[in-house]
Length: 99
Image 1 (cartoon, rainbow, N blue to C red):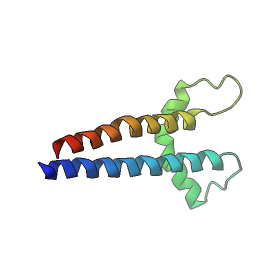
Image 2 (image 1 turned 90 degrees about the vertical axis):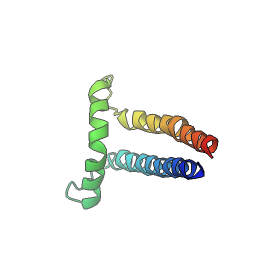
Image 3 (image 1 turned 60 degrees about the horizontal axis):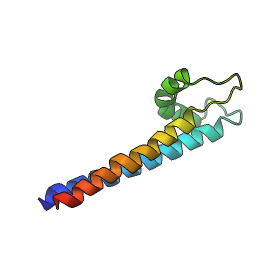
Image 4 (image 1 turned 30 degrees about the vertical axis):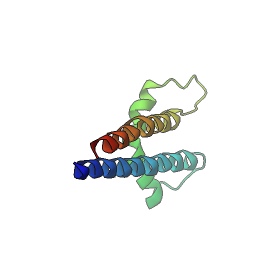
């Protein structure tokens, strides 16, 4: 059963790393939105293509309170923290019990 435990632990590590990397992509997108970036820049295009499918549905549901402030990156970062605290830790605990 140690193989299943090691597999679950590996899944937890990979998921944690992917969530961490995506959180930094969200932060980079939020920071770059404060300036007037060149829309033809490949980095700007990557950030937009990587984050817009997640941010757009949240942006539609969140009111801006007529301030023009986009809180969707903050919501996504909070969801990522929740997934790291709940899902990743649960997988690690399950891996420890299976071993």
